[in-house]
Amino acid sequence: MDYVGILLKFLGSFGLFIFGISLLSSGLQKTAGSRMKKILGNVSKNRFSGVLFGAGVTALIQSSTATTVMAVGFVNAGIIALPQIVGIIMGANVGTTTTAWLVSSVEWSSLLKPDAIGAVCAAFGALMLLFTKDRNKKNIAEVIVGFGVLFLGLSQMPAALKPLAELDAVRQLFITMGTNPFLGIIAGIIVTVIIQSSTASIGILQSMALSGMVPWNAAVYIVLGQNIGTCLTAIISSIGTTKNAKAAAYIHLVYNVVGAAIFCTAAIVFFTFINKAFGSTSITATDISMVHTGYNIAALILLFPFGGLILKLSEKMAGINTQADAADASELIELDESILETPSYAIENSSDAIVMLMDLMRKNLTLGVNTFLEKDYKKINTLWSNSEKIDKVNDRINEFLTKLFNENLSADESVVAAAMIHITISLKRISNRTKGFVALTENMRDNNIKDACVGAEKLVDIFKQTMLCYDTMIDAYKTDDTDTINLTMTEADNVAEMREKYKALHLALAANPDYDVEVGLLYAEAARHLSRIAHNIKSVVETIPHAESPDEAIAEAMRRG
Image (cartoon, rainbow, N blue to C red; front, side):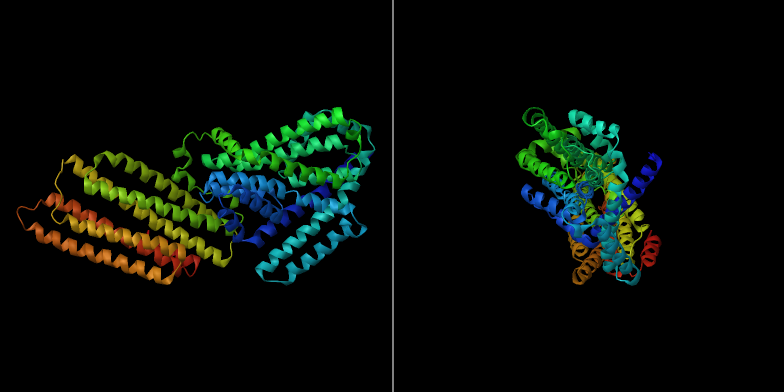
């Protein structure tokens, strides 16, 4: 037997199959665009709704791995709360079964021959790619080509594998996996881990079934292993991320391992004691689709009530021991680089991360100014610690955006990414001004200053106006509303005007011999920090509507920096 020829034929057809799945999934994700993120990002706290969203999204993009990795990324970015991920993952496992039904459809009718379907779709999609310039139509063409290539690969795999069905060693191997559940599950895990796709792994098993070499019991155990193996990609994507993101990946693992353990036990009982002969009969591709779908639906029904327990176990595995630890906002703001290849997701994730950064900075700025005004020296260490975390978050967002800018972006996406880079630079300057208040507070502590400056209430007024300007900036960034942007700039100018009046007041008071100039200088410097913060706020909102080109935005950011 020509084993080299068989291997080459299989690898060629398998390559087409994998490429088709990848192209199909990529095209569907691009077609869905930011709507996918909106669906996942706004999923309700109701676990049942999460199941529906997870199943629908996965059925749409043809990849539970993509849905899970995406969800892990959203948890990492703080867009989805950790408890919401449980339902999404449960639903994703059900949604991923749709591809198996596409593969098994070739058994239902002679009209659904995969080679004919593949040829027509690949040719039609290729023509669309060649003759259309519209971005959305190109994405749709990519979906059609992917669908066609998938079926072309599928049409050749059974023929490539058929000679192996005649070998006693191959038949014995499947018999062994059928009688030894552990080996069957391990085989399913290994194959899925190697090719990083349970969908493709199921497709290979179905191709073998089309060649008549797979018994029922072996197929069931392999399918259970394949569902466990698909968790590895999410685990890998969580490396180096927050504890919440790690817990999200562990939810996927725990859910599939527990489900596989339960149904493996049921399968052993059935094939050993109830109907031993049935286990050795050949399974069809359609039967595998039924097993795959039936298992995932049954696991959902059985484990859905225990979602809370799965969440708690996953949190413990990720090292989340307290509620405060789980809600650490400085961790939630992290970004997952696994979504860089889908710019629409990455841009919206970055935008949400910037809003969260603004909220963190607002809290620290308020704490910094109040610590200075109240001379609450006990909070100095907290302020430095907060500022350090905020700087790390800002650097992380900036690094992510820089990598995103180097991806293959459209002109509009490049403008947005460049503008956000500029915004993170301005936010970094605001954070540095907050550190200025900490330094001023340390100065007062070291010099044992206890009395407030004459006219300190004027500084409080400037602070209130600055925070009003800051809040309007956040609204302007969220809404991209021209009136709100203009209002923010007007409020920033008001802060600058108030600071000039305070400066004049300080100079006038300095002529009074009873005026403590040393204290007055500290308060005047505090007023200057607030004025510079307002200036940086103005720089942020100016970037929102005026980044006409990526080069302009970056050049402007460098000029200001």
